[in-house]
Length: 387
Image (cartoon, rainbow, N blue to C red; front, side, top):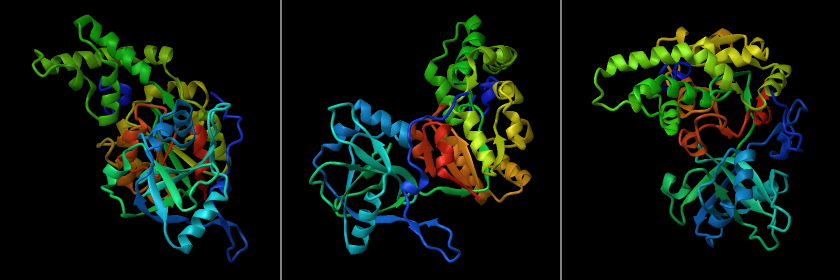
């Protein structure tokens, strides 16, 4: 399986109607020489300090956790990291940020206080968010931060250490390139079903988690499932793959579907002038749901596993795509659902966005240092500035 998603190693909805904040809700407009508005780059510097331990309880409340995931792409590790802002300049920046709306986390009726959240990158690579509770008497110099990974342990921080965070800005790009499986097409269940059908005659168990493991780690699926001492192991793998490839079109037709908000996101990006492409390890068979909904015409360049000698996380496919699109890698963003997608983006020198619609989870994607993580493609137009 691995990045050979359509081989499984073996081988439309509208945007939310709720009132989401716009880009300007997160950034401070500044005057420029040509009288066009731009966004001021904001960073905050603070000292790490110990909190009261209340963050662990709050971040794991079901209603709060659900909103952190859907709005910020962050499934928070229990607790918050506390900073104390030092100096007049940093304090002014923090006060200015708090004056903007951010993303609202709202409790159920009678269930607590609202909180405003601001997406950030911690030490230049770890995605996170500042969480500002709207409570009376909240310390004016205090900053609380969440991330999908334990921040202290991940960054080897101790009380008194200085830490700088950068408020996430819209990513300036000319092109948006997409993975297919788990990003445009929800095919995870189809992979599980086709693997079970191929393995059933041989009495081989197919754990659901093995499917995710293969997609996330680039390991060949049958290498994970078959025991090392399997007799005629190579021959068995070949037979299983052959069967799965034969069954794949019918299984995908029954169990595959478009990921949430694909059409609307593509329409918005195209209307803004973005050049759109696909880079996938899949064969063309996985494109069936896209073709059925008339979405393949959105993409001017498509690079599949047949077009490259080296698969992700090698950047070959992404570099081929940017060249064909007529943009530099630094002018493009790659959107994918697995750590390998983020790794390929970084190797290619382009922006990386992880999406939680496929095999990857918030923690695994965060560990690779994407520019942003989003819950679904509904959020993608919000975080891109098309140039």
